[in-house]
Length: 171
Image (spheres, rainbow, N blue to C red):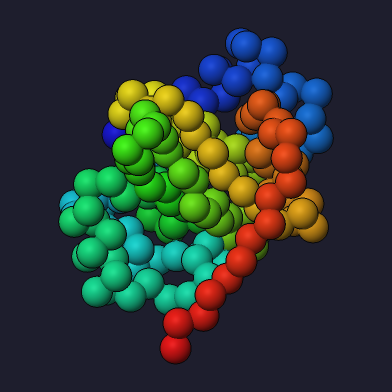
């Protein structure tokens, strides 16, 4: 499933989306395509812009990710370079309907401010609808202003409670 930038822009602008938002300009988005990560498309990960991922792609983890049908990743590609990505997990629970948890949205340092993160987030929400999930959720650090701007542009319904995250290091 690939989305071209012109399709995304027409959807956003016709629904009264972000025309009033300040960005670097839509022309800079020309040629960006959103491509789902699959065994066939994983060679795109040979050319990744700086800071799209936190670390180098590990071939063993990549294979495990692709083999698990509940893991979803979309790549923002420009001129055969991955300039952004979003990963999510469709999960099930005995007392809930399926939901999609967006784990991470990353955009290369030279491509930030062009709404690529918004495009990726909207693609993942669209995918959740196709999977018949009942909800999509994500969380970010309170001081991550760029992530906050990105997610607010997708117009989420705010939650009423604070979230505290704990990280357990397993050595």
